[in-house]
Amino acid sequence: MKKQNMLNLLLIIIFSSFTSIVGIIELQASFDKLRETPQILSTTSQQEIEKILIDQLPYKRQLRDVYSLLLRAQGKSEARDFYITKTEDGYLQQANYFAESNPNIKKYAKQLEKMTKNLNDTTFLYVGSSGKYIHGVSKIRPGYPTNDVALQKLDELFLELSYRQINTLDLRKIVPEERDTYQEYYYKTHSIWTDIAAFQATIQIMDELQKRNSIFNYDKKYALSSNYRKDVYSKKMVGDQLRSTGIFFTTVDDLELFVPNFPVNLTYKDVSKNVTRQGDYYQSVINPVEYARKDTTYFNASNIYFGSELRHLKLINNQIETGGKIILLTDNYFLSIAKYLVLMNKEVEVIVTENETSKTIEKLIENEAFDAVVVATQSTSIQDSFYNFYK
Image 1 (cartoon, one colour):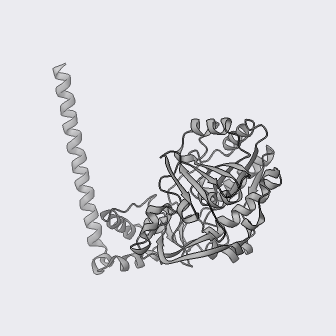
Image 2 (cartoon, helix red, strand yellow):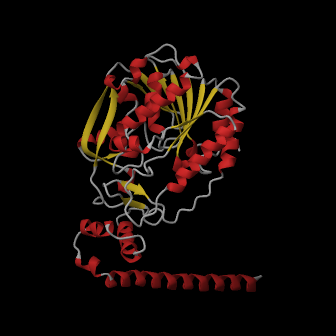
Image 3 (cartoon, rainbow, N blue to C red):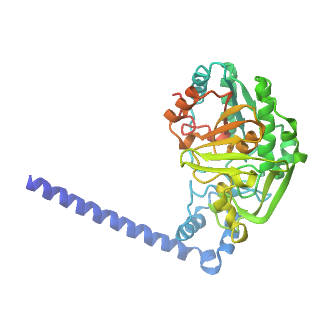
């Protein structure tokens, strides 16, 4: 036994020494790259480095590898091997150089079919959208990969659901229409659409639900854009994509909140954290911690609505006596429609499926009396992490 312990100890020492030597060699190689790259040595600011990177094609790896070290030194992440690129018109886009995705479309369709069989008289609707990348509209620079595969997967899912006679709503439009609204619907630095886009999507969803259940015949004043105002916070928003790159890749966005002009009394409850707020639109929908930054620093676009690290939340409209009760199973992209859905309904319960357990989702759907179950995703969310229910 002692000999075996000594042998194990010796192997540990040898392995530790080997990994230390390899680490030192890799560190030296990194410094060698810095010496071999005159552009880096001759620059004096991060801004100049990032301007060089904008014109570097993906196969020119050396400068990007060095820049990765600089980002890590600042405590920033470089997810998926520098996956954020800049389009010709200044929008940041996800390129996915080495991200491998093989979603099982038929399996997801069967899961949704299984869910619908547990709903009895409850209305079901699957809603899909392309996301920020739109083929034929997004001006991807030559040499950079696109997310066309994700769009094809969305087409396949719609086809599978149609075969199973499951209600669907495709929010994608024809290309000319998409071009006309793109700048209004998407931020340059954020992966999630603007309030205007979320508002328009909500109206389409409600129109679709109305066709199937009369309880969703809401007051049309809530669907008139003239009854809302746009509150603009100039150059105050840094989107999630800009936080993953250097600040000089593109300009900071204006934060534009599309706010109701009519009286609002909502209750917001974060079920997973047991946090409750009640009041007007700003008091209930806008995250007070993030909003407090308005006079001092940039807003974090990912946290401006409701709160941070959201899993399960509930919104109640105290302004109306009757209305629909909806559960929304969503990704972060569609999360922003919840604040408009609740203006047109009595109650909206929201679950970000990637952050919640299948047991919680299935129990809630089967035990609560919802008028509608809405499952909503962008194309890039069609993967196992989202479809973690009714397996």
